[in-house]
Image 1 (cartoon, helix red, strand yellow):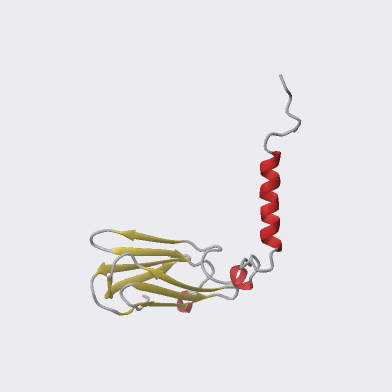
Image 2: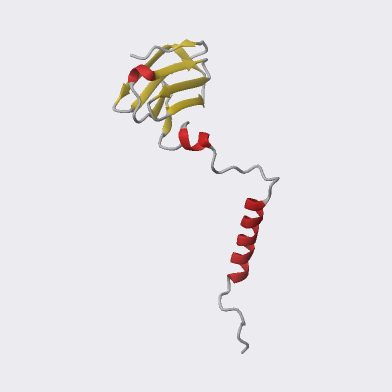
Length: 133
């Protein structure tokens, strides 16, 4: 029986992965930027979660907006896209959410309680702005 000279059977695989990662990180032509200020300071995704719940009767969008005051939230909808703009002292949120079906924003209602925004739409074919209650 012949003994394999390598100590670990996956050494070659790990060396190749490390080589590819180093090549990617050191390649000046790469379009990868892991430390942009936009990624760190603004936008959804860092500590914000958006859920869309769809039924035959309504479409419900629920978004976490921690640290935002109600008066600093602006909502717009064109029937197919919901735009949420909100700000706090530490963060600016700007998100365009493509809705899975066309909605009637004339009948939309929005509530904001304890950092959770909830917008409810009826399915339809018209467009307008949304007032936050």
